[in-house]
View 1 (cartoon, rainbow, N blue to C red):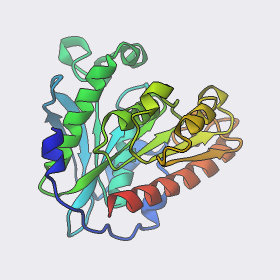
View 2: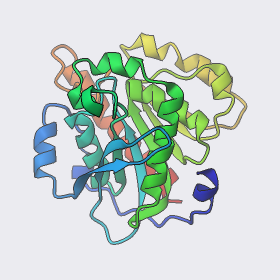
View 3: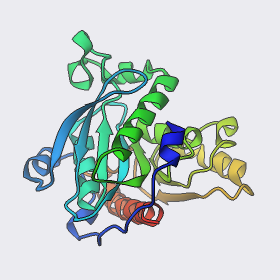
Length: 271
């Protein structure tokens, strides 16, 4: 895969981000966003080195080639909300691919929707299998006729930790965004050569306790690790903008983090 990815060409510029594209996708209106989206979305079955992976692909409306963003779901698996996040990225000009990394783990070979406990199934996933499946998804995305030849990854919660870890495993990625996901161990960070943006809620010390050790490990390496901690926001703030106690803080954090995400991806995927 690496040789094939290295042989790919350069990227054209993305179109301007519209006001609608800068709206942070919340969970409470995910189904409506999917139903009313003007963008083309479709289910595809992507062959990978660890079996086929059911994936939701959304295309932007633009006249030129688009860069690819792989969207890694939460510990709850591939949900309507994650699919709406992919749609939001497509609204900003990216081809967004959200794989169901629980594909084949349910009854009769099903995925997230077939499982009574996606959380338990996520915890049982083999990290090496996850890596190989993400490699296959990235290769599929970059091979699309409509795709430009750079890709990034973004993940949330478990997916945030997975996005960070994948950035240490796949140097051909051009950017990784981590929403409230723990940083990898120091020995894994030693392999990091991909710019990372970490977005965290201030009330999430379980995850935030890993920020400073990661900073110290990366200090002096020249590797870009940008961090934003949104005071008052909790874990999962992008999805939980209607949280009973934290709604205001989560909504503010979600808007700021989403805009920061788009700026980061545009900077690193359009060059």
